[in-house]
Each structure stands twice: as C-alpha cells, then as structure tokens.
Length: 423
Image (cartoon, rainbow, N blue to C red):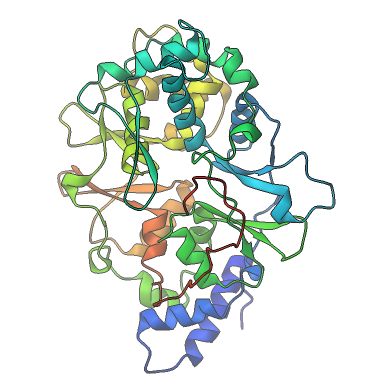
C-alpha cells in the first residue's frame, strides 16, 4: 500500500480505516461523526516550522499589532508575565488577542474618551476618534452577550482623512495601553484550550458551530501549548484527503446539495467601493463576519475582498493614506496593493476575487481555498454577479454535526473565562 504523502494525508487514511469498519446501519453523516470521534487531537499534525507566538501581557497595543502582522497570524495567546516560570498553562495564559478585538476595542474606548469617562483630554486623538467615526452604544442581548451598535444610516460617520491614522498610531494611548490591562474585556476571546485527549469531532464542532477561529492544544497539567489548530489547517488536511473513498463520497457533492452557500443573496454582507473603508470594519463587527466583498458601482460584482486582518494596514502602515482626503474601500484596496508591491509581500489582496458556482463540488472549493490561502470564496451566477459566500467555517460545519447533549458541561470550568466573556 502506498505511503501517505503527508501527515495530513495519514490522518485521512486513519479515517478511511475507521470508515470501512463503521457500523453499516449508520448514515454517511453518522459514520463521519463516528470516525472523527475515534481520533484524538494529539495526532493532528503541527504546521511546518511550528512555533507558538505569544503576546506578553505587558505588551502595548502597538507591539501586539506588530507581532500579529509580522507573523501573519490573526490571533495569539496572551501570556501572563506575572505567572511563575513553572506555572501550568491554565495559570500562564489569560486570553486570546485578535485583530478584530484590537480594532473594536480602540473604537469603543474612543467613545468612552469622548464622553469623558476615562479622563482623556478633549481634542486628543482618542477623544476625537468617536467624533469622526460615529457613535457606538452598548447593548446586552437576551443571551447575555455584549454587542456594539453604530448609526447605520450615515457613511459620514466613517469618513476620516488619510492623516488620521498617523495621528492615532503615534498617540500615547495607542503606544502605552497594555493588553494585560484589558484582557478581562469582552473584546478578547477566552483561552479555550483542547486537551490532547479530546477528539477530532470536538475540535471540528468548536471550529464550526461554536465559531472558534483557532484552538490551542495542551496536556492537562502541562505548562506549554503543544499545538494550535486553525480552520485553515483543517481545510488543508481535507485537501490532502482528496482521492480517498471516504472523502470522495462527501467531497464530490455539489454545493447546492449541501445547502451552500448558507446565506441568501439578499443577506450577503457587503460594502460598495465608494463607501468609507471603516464602514467595512464596522459591518464585520456588527454582522459577526470575518470579511466581506467590495462591490463595484453597479452593486452586483465584487472588485475585491476586505477581511478583518486587513485592519493591520490601517495601524502598521498609516502613511500610505496620507494623501487621501477620505479613504473609501476602493482607495484602501488600491493603497494596500501598492504598498504590498513595494514591500514585495505576498497577500491574497494582490489577487483577483476568487469565485465559484453553486454546481461546483465542495472538494474543488476546498482545493481552491487551500491553494490560494484564503478564508472565503464568493459564489457567482452565470452573469458573474455575486450572490453568496462560502467560508472555511461553512465547509467544516457540513462535515460533522453535533450529537444531542454532546458537550454537556464541557464549557463549565474548563478554563477561567475573563469577566463578561462568552463562548
């Protein structure tokens, strides 16, 4: 028998072995659940040159953005610098910091400053931010989750001059605020870790239904992170399984057969090319999405994609917008693309919009997402009009389903969650 071509393909062969001996009365969906329930996450392959990038709790917001950007990652665990060297992981890590959290935390703190609730001087970059970006208000949903809302009617609230971000990123507020001081904010994700003995099924459900972007893997009682599993790494694993019978039985199905895309065309979250770029980031937060298409003047075809990680270009390279009176979504794409070319940096932003159709097989979508190293693909009709989106999370959610009462008390006391956090 031919040896697996990669560690990920080896996992695929293990699933194949389990698939062949699964109870014959099980449906294909139940068989997949059963297979993934029998594989421990300890066997999930580490990425090449695997290294855990940590953010020390005394790092500033500016340092944090730089670390995330330099290492091309969306998030990182926050390490408590006051914890002893021999502390277990449960005492060593106090949360996960994400680009999304940094962006929205800055905006919300600006509202507080403008309202005089944290002592910032009127006229400072922080106090002026809210007057330029619009009013944020807090509300608590019936589930207890805290959300922010903005005035959705006016684009003027998000129209800021190109020099604004230079002012913001040079402020003492941005340079001196420490992530450890705000790790209890609902802006940071809790440090929800998998144990090495947990199963692939648990991992896949957390990355899909429970919307976790990444999952640290630890040994109970250990003092370090053994692995970090992301949505992207799972889709890469699936791409390495192409050709195996168990995968082909699922992967050859058309998107429409699997109920994809999940969102109806009229519900697609998008921004027009002439709208302020900050409108895009506000919509991502309000609608709970990690990216959206930038539409042409007709409003039917996508000319680009902006993801939440792209907020880094507002914070790490603010000088590239200084000649813009206002920064539209199209201006943002143009300026960032030019900046990336000058820096000789590879990025999905440099390429054209990746698309598919409803009658494409899901395995073809997996291969596209994996080869292009992107997190979403847009569904178009025969005229090329954008009518939907498929994300990594959507794909994983169609691979497994949650059995009744599967998690039980899994979320109770697994880790100490920060105040006001929700899973």
